Length: 183
Image (cartoon, rainbow, N blue to C red; front, top):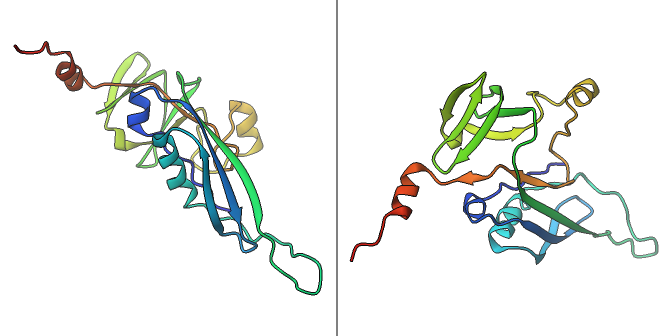
């Protein structure tokens, strides 16, 4: 099986849009999605969810209807994605695009950068440098000891709960939106 977790859209985070996206999938015996139906959800969140789910691949599902005309079974799967904006849980690990993992004290995400502190010292990186923010420190699939030690559940399966830290406007955007109107 291959699951891709939806990305919380920046535009939705700036507008503080949270909520559920409900889908109904039809999966063929060979594991391909034959139909994807949107049941409900905010359009910004739906778009991100559908983009991710179209990349999913299920393993071959065994089963046939019994009888003289053996027909393939198609499986119906309802699934709900919950998008939540909240302060990050501790500990905080930043998983960077270059493969590094940084244990940070605090993190704030802006539209043009990510600011974090380590030992009281502030740092800033470009938003595209970050892959993931979570409570899991490992680079590879964890052992049971890792999970017990850090009390975190790694992503990867269809138990979906998409979380994001609050997104703040950049200083440049604040100046543009805070200007008094000229008459």
